[in-house]
Length: 207
Length: 268
Image 1 (cartoon, one colour):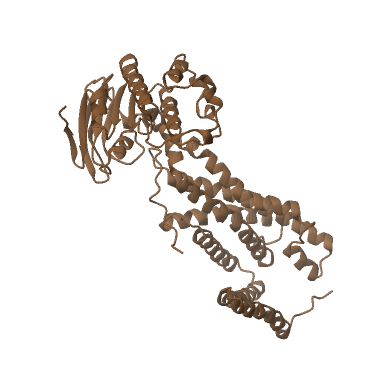
Image 2 (spheres, chains in turn purple, blue):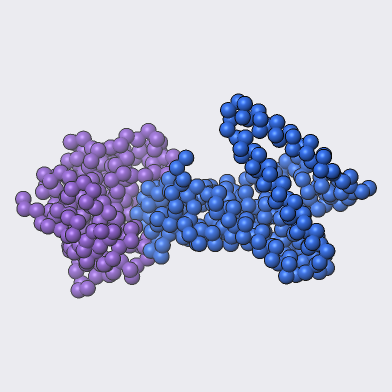
């Protein structure tokens, strides 16, 4: 692969889907939409390398296969539509070594104060879980974000806040972003280009 | 003291008790009568058969025969462990994993006991080797089966959580660590409890048998202590082996959780 700054999917195929080829430059956000069940989430999971696939993904010219799976998944990080939590409190899901200088700022932008870390998981609402799952991934500072319906259970005000936050992150951290949503209006707001996922490839959507 | 021999009549009297249970089960609609009768018959036949085999074996101390019988016992134990699981690893791999864990839990420990601790000559003397191996296989089987069963069920039920942890950049060991430790505990706790209760709550079967057979209680107790140590150690290492072998199969070379190697549970 030539040295492209960003993420490239080359003939990526899995199960009965593909091949998909796509290049997302650093700092760019690409929207993905498509029929329910066509394999949008599976596509993200193939890029994150948690399901078996053919073809390859490259980050800044380095193949997925050259890196250890945990290393790849921290750099190309997926936030699934449904988040999972396994300890009792919010804070225990965050790596204490990863305390970023700007994580307090991130907390505020997502509508939380710093006492959220001692909250009980069992008392979180669906929307709170979704925002905290996003935060949990953002503090690890990934190079690529794979977002599966990241605002599905949020109210209008929080949708705006999350869209704004992610736009800032793409711009400031030069993070590449692949955003899956059913809401075409949203995709045209947040993404430079929007593709429709079909079983056998991607077709670009016109505004 | 010679042990009093039981006549066929004595055994039939005991069997009548079981028949009464079967009749009761039928009259209150429990639906267990068929299984009670069949298991009772099966147990009798199996034990009579092994009694004859042992009688023959004890008369001819032969390494080949002891080895052959041990392998049969191991293969059956491996199958029992595998067959008892709800979501078992499919195919030969699953069977090999169970048999391999039973090999670690029982064969190695029995061999060590015969050569180093009991020190009987030759070490494969069937009067010692077969009962020891049988006790170990029978007792470690429960722990290994419990732990394996729990591991595959938990990994399946908590696949979302495991995948989430992988997505956050954890290694497969970290992502499955809590589940694996839980399952190891599940497998080992019964044997730890039985050590705590030994002699106080229950008199273990082997010791009872030795006392009935005329050994002095102290000799019987010493053997029982040896057996308990062996069972506990065997169960522990067998459980660790089973958990390790199964979890290796549940993650592929790219540390992805692969669950298609698990069968579906039978519909009730």
